[in-house]
Length: 256
Image (cartoon, rainbow, N blue to C red; front, side, top):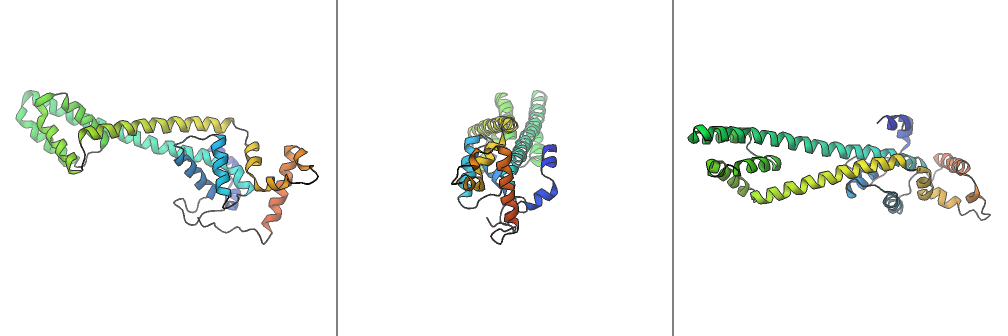
């Protein structure tokens, strides 16, 4: 976040084109590109996939030089957002499993002393948690099934509630396992991608994806490609400055 604030000042952000019809409307379109890439790749970013993704986007609308330089930071922000969503899901699942454990423990304790009162505890749980989610169901079912017939009424209620939703306990177990595996993959990919972003030389990426760079390299004398990076970058920025006052350029929001 500190990197984003340092390298993306407000003046710079205001110059980046925005999408007017997008879930992230009002944000720079390169942020939308980053979100889409992270979503489709499940948090995994590599230079080949990124270049291909940006190249495909530019077949419709070329990106500005400033946008290309902003992509690495936008990807960092998108990955942090991806980690935030995964963390919220993990935290929510932990709370639901803890709540299920409390109810299951209470039923076990009551069943050991006054089996007839289990139904009263079950009624209290139903009032407080009428629509249990996957995490709650998985934890509760695991604990209740381990008690055998002493908590059969609780298991019967759970199976009936799931049947109303067209599900079974086994299906919920499977869905929960798949969800946990997907979350682990997404978190691992996101952390690995953040490391990749920090270790990459983005000058090569910008030159490989810049439409201006591709045009300048057509220099018939062959001089431009032989220049050092700083000189080539100066050329690109001059073209960018000229474009800002050209009628062929537009600073209006871009329709998706």
